[in-house]
Length: 177
Image (cartoon, rainbow, N blue to C red; front, side, top):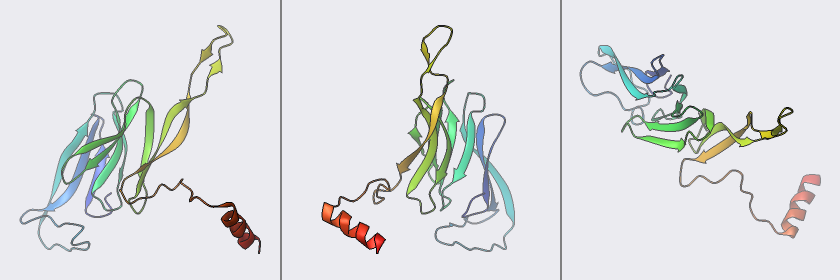
């Protein structure tokens, strides 16, 4: 369910991503960014709209909301072997493929402040020797986490600040004492 307004997003057996929300029968729908807490005395109606579809079996999976309710991230199977991670803007309907279906990507999740999108991907292959043909095979990939920066001002959380040897010693001394 949306963290910002009365809506849920569901996947169907027809490989569709569907947004279901309560909207007022008359007037404009409230904007969760401008009016975070709105009580409506207006009659509401249920509205459903298809946001995306896929042609492959289990085509759309694992949708998740951004912290502000404006974006949805999900996995969409675009090929026999892999799934893309897609970002969808609810306001414009724009779809951005964050990771294509060259690999099997899954479990997208937004960081709470909206700086990062993380997901798991099977893209690092570990070869195993086949005992019958004595050849190398790649039966499974390793599931590793990946992180995508979503804002220009977001700093890479894995980048360490450059420190001189003296600054490193000072930090170690501060930790010890």
